[in-house]
Amino acid sequence: MRIGLGGQPRNLAGFYLGYFGLIGVILPYLTLYLKDLGLTPYEIGIIMAINPMVKTVAPGIWGRLADHHGTRRPFLRGAGIGALVTFAAMLLVRDFWGIVLVMVLYSICTSSILPLVEATAMEMVDRLKIDYGKVRMWGSVGFIAASLGMGPVLDQTGSRVVLWAVLAFLAFNLWSMWLLPDSEAKPEGAPTGGLWALLSTPHVLAFYAVCMLMQGSHGTLYGFYSVWLEDLGYSRGTIGLLWAVAVGAEVTALMYSGPILSRFGTRRLMIAALALTVLRWGILAVTHQLGWLIAAQLLHAATFGLFHVAAVTHTHRMVPEHLRATGQSLYSSLSFGAGLTVGMYLSGTWYESLGAPALFAANAAVAVIALGLALVAARRPAETAATSR
Image (cartoon, rainbow, N blue to C red):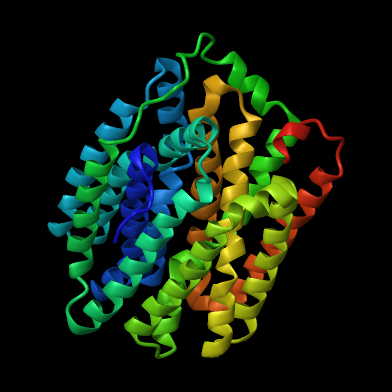
């Protein structure tokens, strides 16, 4: 597959292709491997919550270090090596606590990678005038290829092949990160003042709270969607296909996200995505018919694709230049970190007693709260008019 970009944009697209190919293996299928080991839903929920839990702290630390030193490259490369080495230990452990230890170390390494790359990507958007969505969509292509490819493989082989697939993608990620440009920002002169001034601003706090609630509402989807469907009798190939449908819709949304973002602005686009998130979880709360499952997965175009583009862009415009890595790290920490940690942990705690439909109904309620907060924030005076368009 040829990436129709040149130079640095092509290298960035290659990174996204590999990074989200890795996610396309872990999200749909690692839970099935853990289930085959005999772990309980509660234990699986804890293990799957480790990565977002670590993301509540680690990205902020790495982001601050990168901004303070004015360089991201050594942190990215070190993280890539550490991720490959630590996950290799998963081949040697099969007990709950051994897996927990491996996932903690692995998550510490991987948690810094995406926010640091996103900061670099948005600088490239400004400098090279590229369309972020058209570059980022290669990550969705990687996710589709991995999730589609792994489903039939798992139907024919043991689920342990998931571990080898993860290691292959980690090796590719390490190579791709070596090709990315370094930070364009100068080292930060005042390590703390700028950050605390930023975080004391009400509209910044509201933005991060909305992102945290939004991703928290995805807890059941990312933690137990595959397990739920398998319990209902769907094959692993069908499960992979449903994940691929979601990311296929995401690819389409990313391809056209540039003009959509220019037309509606970041705030209105996030509000629309939140409303569609409420609809998505509402569908899953009341039916598991295949047609409706497909319809709900198609909404991933907005609930992740367009929301993420708007949120990353809003973050880049909201923070000063010397805090770009920190700003993207906070977005990652509070949304994919704190939000998903709580969402996935509670899903694991209540999955057996309440069932997936009730959990999806609760997720819809969380999305309603996020939507209400976003609407209230949007009615405030345009304190950051430049950031909302």
